[in-house]
Image (cartoon, rainbow, N blue to C red; front, top):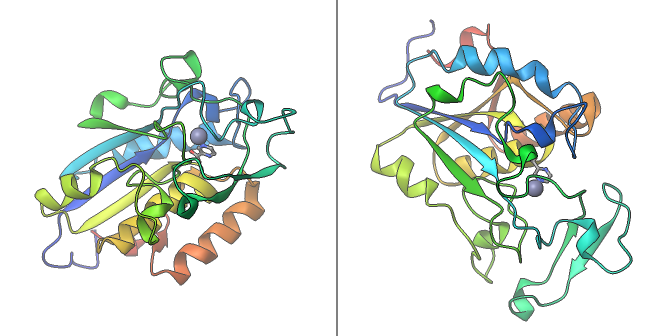
Length: 232
Ligand code: VGL
Ligand code: ZN
């Protein structure tokens, strides 16, 4: 519990996409060792965060990120595609294609078994708009371009209304949705932390190393559960 907390210090915990489809062996888009994060996440849920939220990747069957929804069903994980003007010329983008995962109301979209989801104050749904990929729990990446956001979850306003100062991000996957969420949190002005024990990468240890490097370069504090630097 040292060093002393910064003042003011009103922390929120975001548990990102801790869902069955991201967990081996049965998940559709398995993240290596994903179930290792459940115990550390449950431990964090016992800390006195001012707000604890979980997110769910919550796709309609027609979602643009599913390889099967593109001509010729290109192989997932390795294929990217450029989305041709689904909204406007300015909204053109290239994205990675994934297996069908986290379809709304399916078994794979449920929280991972053992995750103490009863301790969260609410659930934020993301990736709901079929036209756009949304890794971040806050908004899609067009938020930061002239094209403008296609979809936003309202999370920024929710945290700001409570005068949250610090956002702690854990969950899956470290190199996609955890990273995008942490990067947006820092961009929206929150002191931002990622707790290593509570996250794993799709790209395994190499993916985690690279994601950590990129997050640290953006001012995100990547820490471990036992670290004195955890914040309080
Ligand atoms: C995620 C790929 C596709 C994630 C979600 O939660 O990191 N990754 N959809
Ligand atoms: Zn997804």
